[in-house]
Image 1 (cartoon, rainbow, N blue to C red):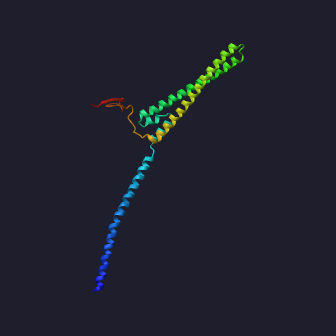
Image 2 (spheres, rainbow, N blue to C red):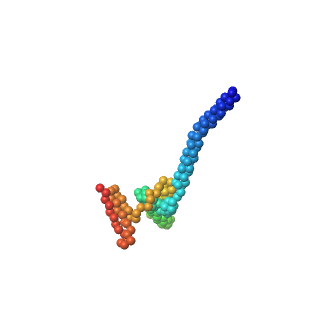
Image 3 (tube, rainbow, N blue to C red):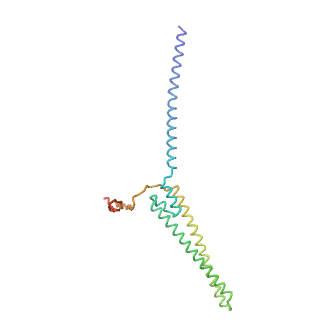
Length: 203
């Protein structure tokens, strides 16, 4: 009788411990499954973000050739125009300054030749004053050229960094689409007439 009671107690204790073990292990298993699912979701999201579309690749190529054109291609018109105008303006000033430098150097060579053949003090002094003035203007042109050359490079590099890391694709827009507040104008292809102009005004 005692043996039967003891054996029944052992069976009850064993079943109770196994049931409690199941209760404690099942939440952990569920948490591990949730964590695994979250990890898979994060990995898929990161892989999708790192995947470059054809439009992204084309935008980088365009911005490498003409700064700002890639931003405009992806739908960021204002930012693209700012990069384009800034780079072109800086490059134009650089070219004009370089052209002035070439002209000033040629002028200095002429003045040096005149100074070497000057026959009196007054003529030589006048030529010397012109040489000093030309050299002063030449130095300003050199500083201006160097400054705007660096500024052009800064615009170019900033444009590439922006198109690679900070510019998202707004999607391809309809050709000729122009939106100003509540007014929308678009050129829509038509198989019969070629192009149709559509103007919509929202009140």
